[in-house]
Image: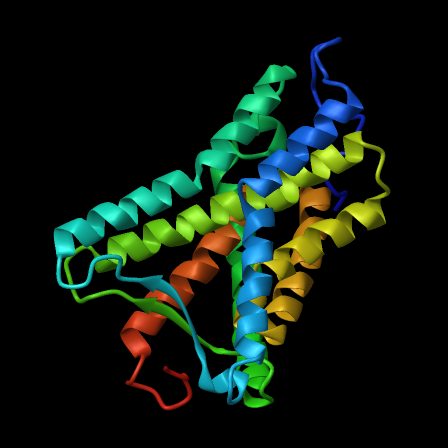
Length: 269
């Protein structure tokens, strides 16, 4: 089967004369990253340095992802959870604005509803493959002392717990795949980067903001980044990657909530 046309630098549907200068493209890309996952990468590095200088091994420390923001006050906690999820998506809105400025839009990245079933099918297949191998890699990395114990959720047992976990998974997926894969590759292509350099930049960035989990989190997510870049270039759509990432995070968050303390192979803090 012939591969779909990838999102090369010459294939973006833009209006003549609307594309900003190279300097503007470079500066806006740095600003988008500084407001989102680039800043998260620096934060993760500082967190990792704190973990490796802490007495004891990495696996004896925990990295909690979805924690209560107001313990004992469920309605206030819910408000903080929804606020955090919503504001985390502002960089995606900024990306949409910047693309519209040049006569494009999120549809250019394949983030739309024009192909829901192919996106869902491809995303589910990718999630099935990466999910099983990812769990095995995490357990091995933690066992070897390269990873902290990841606690995907520590929310109270309230009615909104699982809806918030699902929304959190969706937010993570949209932010990461739109910014770190689709938008970043588009901009680096426009700036004249080689495909290999763009792939490396995207993959290393993905690994960097997972470094708070340990070396295993960095390496595992960097490998995932390489796979996702290849798939994006092959399919020309970020939609399947958002689906895959959402399913992976829902599985991690909800699965942990249901299985923690019930099975002996799942590490808990």
